Image (cartoon, rainbow, N blue to C red):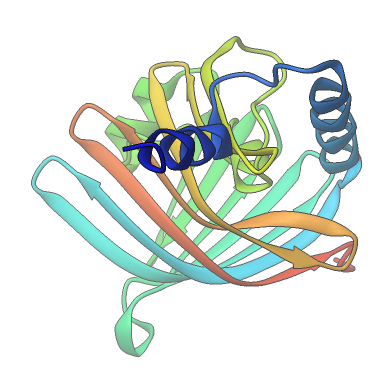
Length: 196
């Protein structure tokens, strides 16, 4: 019994809900500043998206240049190929022979046109392991001074794995969920500062 209590305390110390010491808070703030400054990057991996009865999986190539996001999604054997461009104000979705141009500020229009209920503006931040800066984030949890969970705009975001890519500690596994919509991302390759 004497060994169980210290062991449990050690396990619980690994996960905390907020950075509690000034040094940890400073490290977290520096981490957020470093990743916020990362404006150009490329990530490759897999995406599994489920919304209601609809489920899709795809290979993912995400290129980010400042506020400009470009996603290329391709299914098995190149089927269901989709290209998504977002610039902070509008979203272009090209799938098959169809092109949809949508206002990002109206998530309902994105959902109605694409069938996807996804947080387009928040994803570039969450993908880097930080909250979107212009909306409140709650229920922040940390593991080894890295974000492991947050709640933002009704979305639950869990970060289950990180790896070092150059000078950056970046997520390689994350899951987002709101209601019956969820997305799992597995990032196999990060290229911080990748040219566009």
